[in-house]
Image (cartoon, rainbow, N blue to C red; front, side, top):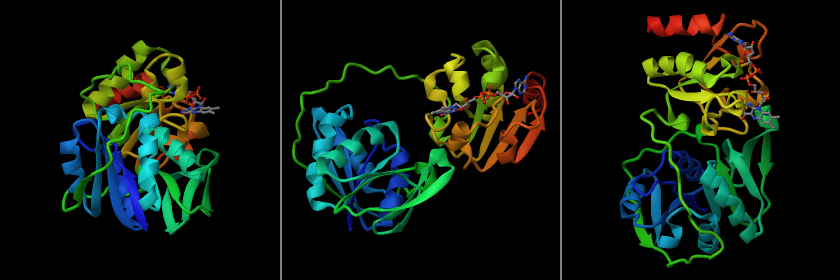
Length: 309
Ligand code: FAD
């Protein structure tokens, strides 16, 4: 089987999310990559070095400069004439492109695969991760999004893929890039951080989040996260949200502070290697998944913990 993997990048380097997708694709067959963008020579070179990659298709065109799915999806659909499966990371960008590709090919998308069980058989979460379904495709072509935390990352070196330019592509003219406001932060990115400190509704305000959660994260070199309740209450920006409708994370250590452990939150973090929960309610559901639980008032316990690190 010939697979085509969408390479997520920022114009300069391949994003980590791609590496897990390469591993998933290698379980199906030959791995080809698609690097689309404007001025992406360096990305294509880096992509060709990823272990296990056979070929890198490069579509270098201003129309692909900002990952506009309306422009990218037709390109992918065209390349699918000579590939059997398209795989993209289950990220915002991947989830923006893959369904459009599936629609153009008139096939079913299989979302957020967790494992490859056979050439057309996969597992995927349902009911916010409370059950795992095994699904089999009956379509001639596969379109899959891949949950990054479910697959090991392919090595970034050791590959010797060939680089091949593909058709010029064009601007579909139905969307345009207006601008991007990108938050600049010295912190690790939430989805690739080794340690995450998350705060919940119990914090009560953005000032308390800053005062209690941020110093602990600083000491640990951790990324910052939050429950949806904390996001909805405006304590932190949207992109901090962990969970079913936020980010799916699986760090080495996850701190859930003043977070009850609703299933929608657990759906985003329960695969973390070690979970530390601080909650004043000993019956809070978060303690059912926690490796270390502290029943305490967070406003006392967290500053004390931070002080001792
Ligand atoms: P609460 O449930 O209010 O919990 C606060 C906790 O803090 C309690 O356990 C309390 O005992 C504890 N506490 C209070 N004071 C203190 C103190 N001083 N010291 C220590 N502990 C204290 N939620 C997400 O997080 N992510 C999602 O992606 C998400 N998606 C959703 C999608 C849908 C369709 C729906 C319906 C809901 C979704 N939710 C999501 C919301 C989810 O159901 C919960 O409402 C939310 O996770 C609760 O956030 P919380 O734990 O911060 O707040």
